Image (cartoon, rainbow, N blue to C red):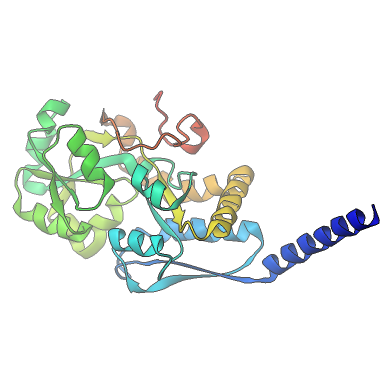
Length: 290
């Protein structure tokens, strides 16, 4: 009996030592470097990740990777636990098989709410579009390795693919019957970059929406980091700081883009994993009932 008590005491001491050691350790959290200083799309995911880590109370260093990693390359490097140990990306079934998803949609599903960037010369043509069938006579542009490409194809669109989002704007400039669906969390800084808004505009009156989530992902070899980030995000949700950061980042943008007045064409997402928390309406800007 004494031996059993001694074992329990030793286990308790070990657990206490581990907790103290973990809180005192320095966590280095490395994310994909943005394309350059003009690429503002990473500002909110980085700020939210910083908030989550702060909520855990651990010592951490949050830094960019040494080199620029486009989405597909970043996912591959993360899978192998090289160069980066956290990536934020739209989810799909394959990514959830290869990596550990932290199933809290960091942008409340806004990654799937898409405005259509077009050539300014085509504004009148797009202003006349009032049906999804009419829109499908045009060709959307998307990235080679983006889940969006398969989603649009599954809904009947003839998708033109490009290596990255900047190449998308280059192709859009010469394709008169094309449009570039960009998330409401991406489109404003993208159009401001390099004065793209001199050539391009947002199609009036319409938008696309498909249910999807942008998550933080970590390598399967790093479950402790996944639990750490999830704990921090949940605490930020519970105390309201998650929503405060989200609202500060996007409320004005959503209002300026007249989202409430647009006709939204809803698409199916056959890539949406079964464990996506779609029933938790607190996690989404647009719920399925809206």
